[in-house]
Structures are given as structure tokens and as C-alpha cells.
Length: 263
Length: 105
Image (cartoon, rainbow over all chains, first blue to last red; front, side, top):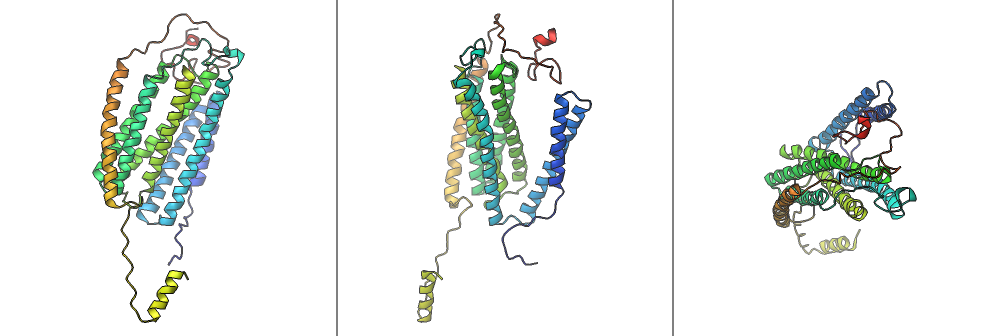
């Protein structure tokens, strides 16, 4: 049938309903687990599995539609880019809330924590050791992922694969160092407003690094199998933009929470 | 109809030849030519070649530094180690792998 417009009219799909059900199970299971209901942990794992499965099959369908069926025309690609930008904008708002909580607590410390920041008696992390190293690692990964992008645009696939592998390795090292820092930290989530704001902000950033790493690993497999061309690689662009966003959030975390809020 | 196409139509009607449109340069999705993309790629490859060894050197330096925390007796303020109820996974925090005072009783 001849199509007189450039848009993609998607076929009916079970995955939105399936993923919504998975999200429902995940949140219900998490609530049950935290409140120590019987079967809470099982329900949590079940919901987590459903969400992971829904993500895998839904995005598998999007890759099939875009790469193999040709539904991602220039107009559709433009729409996808706008969607990614709006999603990243919503993520900025998400982190804005945690920074707001941190500055609310730190700019006017209450008498309960000694009216000083960091709170009286709390030993904080040295920003010039692992946090600074993590900053250098993330900035380097930003450079290597930009190398990947230009290698794809220039049609140099081997260089793109090598630089993307390097980016993923740097991401894994960052996550491992963050894990070491968490285990070694002299304070916990329950050490007042400092522990709460610190682990909430850096923990959610770490979660985003994990998601971004998975996104880049998927792109690596797609790149190896020749799914990205000079003119059509929206999936990689989304991963690279997301990775730069994660990078920028870390810069703000390092400057405000580790450096300004720790000395 | 734009002014340019109207003028072209008039010229065609007058029987004169219309100059052929210039063939556009084939650009990549970034809007740059292939040569510019190769130049950008080389630039970012060189940047990566500089920053990744710097990362490795800084990593080695940081690992040689001591990470010991103050293990002396600390005052117990009321806002520290707040445990209003037990965690679902046990008495210690999620990242307290080395144990905690609550587990020791």
C-alpha cells in the first residue's frame, strides 16, 4: 500500500500493557519487601524480571522496525531525537530535586546537626582521591564516546568499535570504584540528612551510570553487527547524549556534594 | 510559488536555457562533509589517547594513597545511625559489608 506521509503508524503491541503490569508488580513487590510482607521478595524479583523482559522485547521490536523494516524515516528520526531530548530534560528535573534537598540542608544547617555542614562529628570522603579519579574517568569516557560518534559518521567501523569498548571499560571502572567508595564510606544512609542526601543523589547517579552502560553495550553489539550507518544511527546518538548527561550530572555532584559540601 | 521558481518559469517560456542546479555536496547526518568528519574523528582519537593514559596514571597514584579513616572514639550524636526499624535484609546497612554495631548487639 502506498504511504503518502513520512510517519510511522505503529502496529498494535502487547508490550506497553505488559511493561505497565511489570512496573506495577515491581513497585508492589518493593513495598511489600520493605514492609516485610510474606512473599515480598519473590514479588519484587518477579516484577523486576517482567520489567527487564518488557524492555528487551519492546526495544527489540523498535530495532526491527527501524533497522530492518525501514520505518524510521527522516521525520521519524527527528521525532525520536525530540523524544530523547525531552526524556533527558525530565531526568534533569529529577536530579534537580535531589540537589535542592542537598542545598536546603547544607546552606542553612539545623541545630540538630550542630548548625554546621558537614554535620558535627561526621567524617566525610576526601574529594581529591576516588571522587576526583571518577571525575577524570567519566570525562575521559565522554571523549572516547565522541570519538565513537565521529568514527560512525566517517564510516570507520573498526575505530568506532574500539572506542566504544574503551567507553564501556571506563564505565565499568567508574561503577566498581563507586562500589568500593560506598563500602569504605565512614557514614551510612541513616546518618542524618548528610547520609540521606549523599546516598540518594550519588546512588541515583550510579543507577543512571548502570543504565547508560547497558545502553552503550547494546549499541556495541549493534555496531558490531553493522546496524549503524553514517546517516542512520539514532540509537547510538541517544546512548551518547544520555552518557553526556550522566557525565554532566556527575560534575555537579562532584563540585557541590563532594567538594563544596565536604570541606 | 516562490520568486526564484517564478523567474525560472519566465526564463523557460522565453526560450532561453536555464542553468542546471548545482549538485549539492553529500553531507553526513551531522551536516559535515566526510573529510570534516574524519578530521573530527582524528581529533577525538588523539584526545582519548591523551586522557586514557592520564586516567591510568591517576588511578595508580590514587590506589597508592592511604584511605584510612579516623578510627578513634567518636561522640554519638542523636542524629547518627538512626534505626527506627530493622531493614528487610538484616540489621546492617546495604553497603556495610564489614559488619555493624547493630549486628554485634
